[in-house]
Image 1: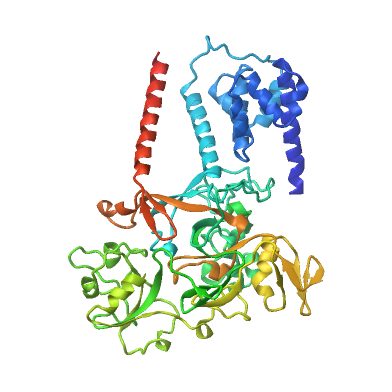
Image 2 (image 1 turned 135 degrees about the vertical axis):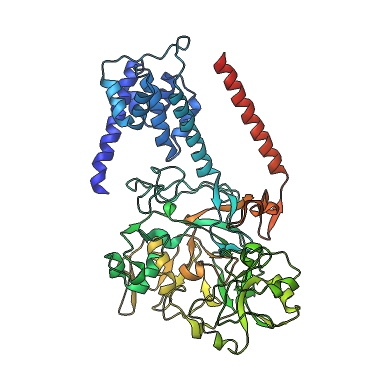
Length: 585
């Protein structure tokens, strides 16, 4: 970062010098050009532009775009009236402003009575620029569009749900990387490893006041904590999981990693450029959370199941496909797999038998878990009984129990002592936890102090180091934080425990731990459209999910939103119709 600082200083000095001379040419005192914020006010004043634009200058990130727009407008007052020259002046404002200020051309506002009609290119450039600015402000401080990409939140959130995430509920977060390509997350479009942002200018985590704080069972969008470090050429990988599997040196040095191939360079990302995840908040700061036989306990009390939670169930009985040899079942009438027919997540990969489906009086879709893997089913059910593992809601499981031909429907729970995997948080042999047998785990709360020892340091090491930026070392059984021996730590932030509603098919806090409060993006609030994947067009729309609000218990329909949408469309039509009349006159 140090080598880029001289460049930043040159850009700032050049821009302020340009302001100084431009203001003098416009009849203002030059010193006003070097006073931050006030210089924006004077700049807009001499250009006779709306003074409220100054608030756009003050928005992190958006202010840089506004600087380019107004610099392009300024160039028109120095005789650069062609669209190309105005656009170049705006893009390279740190060059064009001093050239205009120290050049020979005088400052002269265009005569509005003799002003030529702007070219089509310039009109579109101005319209697109302000549209981007307006959209960026809305996206940063009010709400952001989001699409559900995976089935980890089914059946509360379906793959193909298009929703709005409210930033004002919890308070909008000031962009930490203000100079970035608009409307993308971490990489530029059509690339996998080209950063969409410049990391030499970063702001601390600052959140504006909101209407509330994160509440239990809220559906929350947040930056994936493990996404602070990743590798190129692999879609959304966990760098830390790769390190555990192949060794940190192999990953860091880009050596061959088995079937994965070379993962590419290691990339460190700032918080607001980590990938977005959506989960449900289950554990609050200060809670002690445990999971036993898939049931979540908060401070010793069982937690009610929110929304439409899904679990795996072991099904045995007549007509059930052989667990040893599952295969997709095709409906002979439609020629579709049962996945297409019942809107399943995994492109119709289901092993459910049609005879069972015909006996079920249900309309809710469900999915069958892919049977490939290393799960030892013989330790749970005798191998000579036909059966398969089905993922469905508790409601569907209860209906199955009363279906003819089904002998048993039991919750599929694995014993952590037999099926411990190091991928489960905290990835320590001292805590052999599993997704169904987890904890107890205390969730850090701002201002709370915890006693540390050689065992539980594994639970809080990442929070202390990666999230709260301390150095930590364990030497000879002793803990050193910032080079000082200690046996306790006081947390600076609140943390949350997030889980997906598809409890057996969700990568969540059970795998990567706590979500710090500065990673919270917003609250999922409203579904405006929902589309199925891999189905014919006429079957694509989930009409019952259109224009529905999201709450802790499920979805509720709003008829106000379509009405407001019609009003907005009508206003837009009226505006453009009037603009057309004005241009014709």
